[in-house]
Image 1 (cartoon, rainbow, N blue to C red):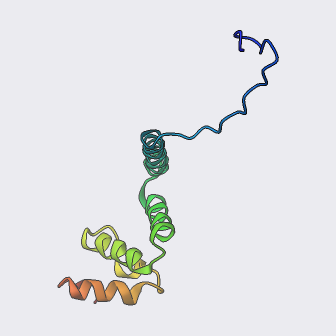
Image 2: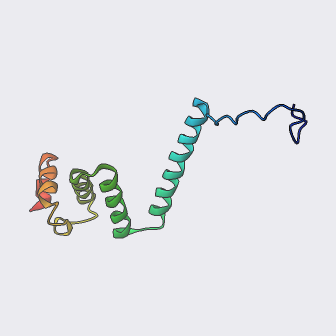
Length: 111
């Protein structure tokens, strides 16, 4: 029998049971982890400005999607917003950016 500090008598201690969290506890932990990751990304971006911030966004897009299309879409959007010129787009992405701009009716931006 357990007296609060030790087992008394000739009973053996019960086998420790593994902790199995409930589904709600798992979902709460996952939500906290996603919030922490979003906070980390926001902190990374808030301290940056200009080209450095764009580089961080591009690296995140590459990591999260692995696609050049997303990077090309970001570059095309920045061109439409007049934040950069076609000459500033990396040679590796120029063809995709040109296609996106042509499809968007903004082909004059690549001339």
